[in-house]
Length: 404
Image (tube, helix red, strand yellow):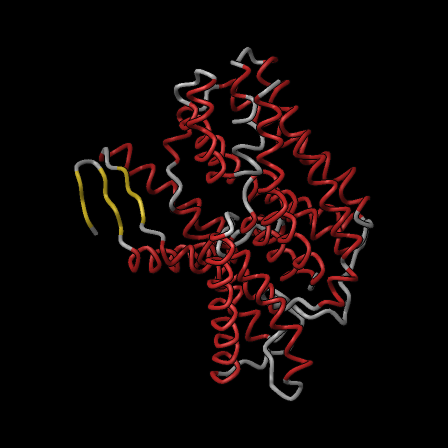
């Protein structure tokens, strides 16, 4: 740990250790509190919110802002998306082509709706019109990263001096809403419509908590899965460098995801007798670990005192955004995606990334599938939309709404 004035930075190793403790705290709370189990609240979410509240108390009592070094957290995100890619097969991509197109169209439509809600909300609550995208896709679907990218331009060109603070507060509150909304929506849809998972489906992330025998996991298949992940990540890293030379900037996990998909589909053709970890309990275990600790570290590092900048009007707009998201998911997305079990799991994920971030969406879906059963198509198509297409489309949509 290093201390500087009224700030305290916990270095990377300590941050990961605390992240694991936070996860177990959430698991303990889930075992003890039936609400968390019944409504599929992910363990890293409940533990992470408690840890964030502890940081808030430290800030208020000792006037010290605690933050974490998060290098390992970001690497865990790469592990997770690469594992998603290793589980993907081209026949699944063909099978998921129509649902992928529908989900993309619905997402683009909702991005416009989200900014319209921001525009209407600022008018209803008497706020500056320039705040509209900060209470829309720049901070919600876009998250902290998009907000940080756009806030300086909004501050300079539209005379919103505290644009960054407003955006960070909106993104933080949105992440909390996203973590809490997905599980209850899925529970409502699954139980209301008596939906069931495909009994032949294999888990992509995590293992069902009850009703199945102990999975076959040992040190050999665990290391085989890690080796395949590392090969895909190395190839993804070189692909990422090549794309940057052509001026295309993407998060590292995107080319790693793509290279993992290519590897997983070439393997049966080039090395048909080679054992491959796709859709094995070992790879599902690694995916679950990477996502759980990533999300625990993300939530425990939230600086909740930044929400103090959220006045009543801005909270009103965000509440309106949550209501609109719920109505859109239940009455539009679920039906358009087929009104089946996969659609219900996608609904949990859609609530996660439209108000928060892609990892939150996948954690929401993971909590649902652990309880009700696998949904491999949902885990394949949602990251392709939320982690790739959305970032490209958001830049155009934000620019359009800023120009209104």
